[in-house]
Length: 254
Image (cartoon, rainbow, N blue to C red; front, side, top):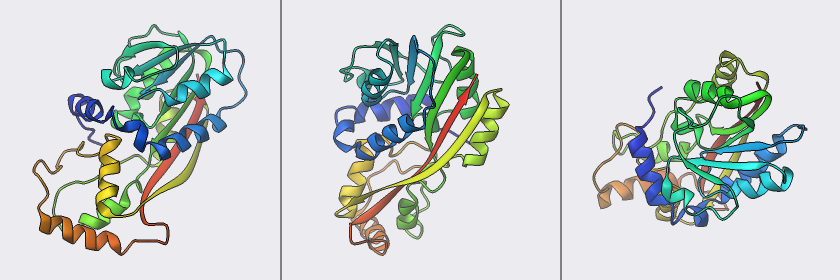
């Protein structure tokens, strides 16, 4: 499965840093759900928020593990600069963590690993976890943003969404990484928007647009926008135009 280049991911989230928090309602719901998935744990002395963004999850984790030293890592320096919680900030790549082996009690990652090579990311997670350390992550599944694929299916040949791993694939990769007590859950979160333009702006505001290969690199014409808008309007519900997040939650131990 081809992932976008690290340079493009970094650039996209650097641009989104000023707008991310205002648009990240669904992302916050997912953080809370992932926190609910955490099993009972012994005392945590050091935790890692891998792909922390603006650091929303840190408050949740620090409330649960008040004695833990928190490490916040993200590819985007712009995101790291917006973290308010006390923590150690690191700019880095989830596939090549700048951390010592067996140094982390809890590896947490919410909606970051989908931009990475997941097999490499899980291998790195296991490397930095202490024996018995806990992993908890949320990623996106294949039905994510299917409304955008519907909108543009008969409009152009560009790729408007990435391909994402299935829960079964994620479970297998966790097992292949020699993680144990692997548990995989699936849920759906749906945001609603008043119109198509607002929906597209929301995707851009969280940095999730224009990342994959085959993406549009020029401005969308008015005619293209109108055709896509007509297609997506067929999906309208009483709550507005839907945008689906197909979420996979993984917990495991080293």
